[in-house]
Amino acid sequence: MVRVFFASLLFAGALAACAPREQAVVGVTVTPVLVKLSEPAARGGTLTIQGRYLGGPHTGRIRLGASETGEGGYLFPAASVRSWTDSEIVLTVPADAPTGGSWLFVEVAGKRSTGLPYSVRP
Image (tube, rainbow, N blue to C red; front, side, top):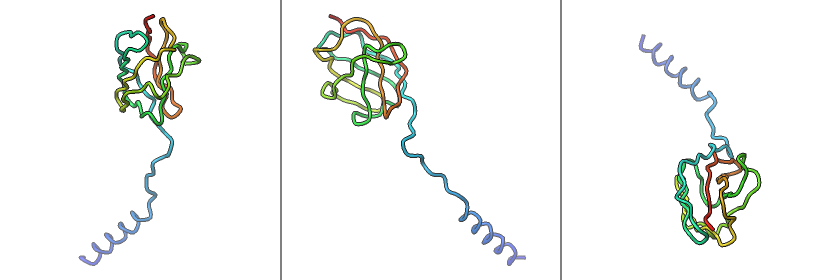
């Protein structure tokens, strides 16, 4: 009886060793989500973006003045970023940023976030 038990354990272990393993798919990301933007700032002021899955400065970029679908607009230069984490981006509004109301998006590894309306004060 004990031999049968050990034999079945060995057989189950052999089957488990042959089973395919789960692998991570390279390049697949979660869609970034914007939650909150700081109050409108003038050029030279500070803009804080809060959200989820915002990536980092090496994989992401910020677009302002885009349409509601995220097309067109002004890309913030990398030099304007003060800090960037997966949940918050702090940057300085550049002197050449468009003024007035528009939409703001964050793009991470080619995936566009949800958009939020934002205004740069003149």
